[in-house]
Length: 574
Ligand SMILES: [Zn+2]
Image (cartoon, rainbow, N blue to C red; front, side, top):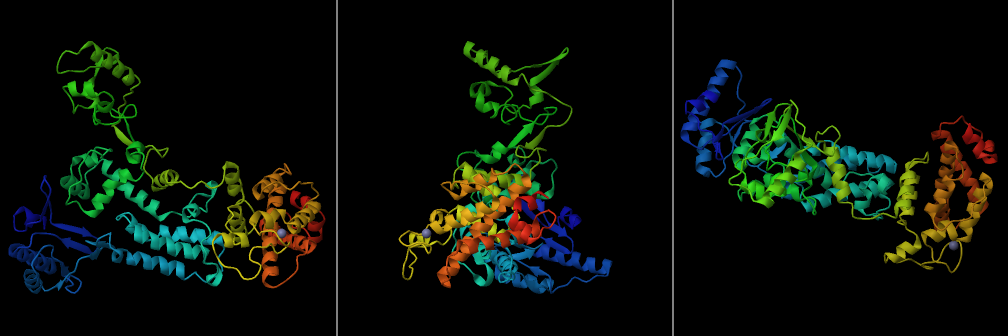
């Protein structure tokens, strides 16, 4: 094929100013021939394919071969297909699993990805999986095949909303469809646990981070074909510069390219990509002195515009400005004219900035500032963007700390998730339902435990006389004296502070979870089954529950239930 191109028998597709010619691409079993729609090309192609069959003894599978035309008349295409004995191919077509020529802005392009998500998550929908398990699964499914899509195309808002809906329904779906109300905002769910979220991966940010990897790849040394093609089409700056804000995007640029360019603007207040990539100086042979940011926090041309305009070497490399005189290196400049006094002062300042420069024998290279080793990682980009987009404040810093600590507990993840929802005050208490305009039958707002009080989270779990009785039973059992604090998170902190012993502390916090969980269970039971509120009975339930959890999940030597009820601290200490 290459020979045919050299002999001018096959005219490939010409790209950009540097006239890069693409005639064929090969990967594994797939071969893609690209060229002008001309009769000559068809003859050459037929001859090459025939020659291939005769020399290799293999046969070209004409049913699996297709010919597609871009801006080619249908009659020519039909004729060409008859001539080559193949099908008329359609665009988009699949190459290496990616839809080629598909418009990323169209929903249809994303349908396979949505199907994949629905299929993978849907099959688990009705099974018993704890919330913790669901979080792991959502992230795992997202990390699998769709990544392929997400690193090539920017997801449109409509598609993102559909993806989030699938994820959300799976997360909150519960057993047999369960509770469908999305009590917590998705942006909060996507926060890290240490910031009060559930740590579910945000598909939009995953998408941006994967696309950002291209920008890093452009800057790496070497000239693979794909990069040569892009440079021919969009300019050499893509492999040399980080800040593209001054570069015009051609109108004819592909959607993919526009998305890659728009990454700069993903964060509103700054060019996060330019800020995240730095230049590490080696021998200074490959770094532009004025226009690359290599010293200080901006290119020197921006810091010293006057000097830049006077320089005779605007395109010079760092090494060109440095001379070795005796033992020392000195900076030397050449100006278009003699400098004024105040311009000389600028040079003094410039020299001050340059003073700490250290040269080495290595070549200059780009470093990814967000990662210690200086090499781009999707994860570091993700974490950075997540912080940048983090606009919803979840509680104050004390509250956030509690939200983080609740996860370090041997309680089952569904219980912890409930405590999490409760601390955010996003559980369906009557007060919350009324607040959301959901109609209730009979006594619409009253607490089940006492008449005349609105059932809010804080009342139901802390200040309701019934709840207070439960807590006092628990404190009696633990042998501690606690004055009920103003909030559930401060109660958590109080119980945290009750012991210096790590194991005991962990046990106490597990009991905190068990108490909240049990109060909620009883509340639901008396609400729907008409049971009665019996603090002593609830306290017994809490003892059984926490004993079971401790046996299953705490690394302590097993204790008998009567030992646990007698002195849980003693059991935990073992
Ligand atoms: Zn009450």
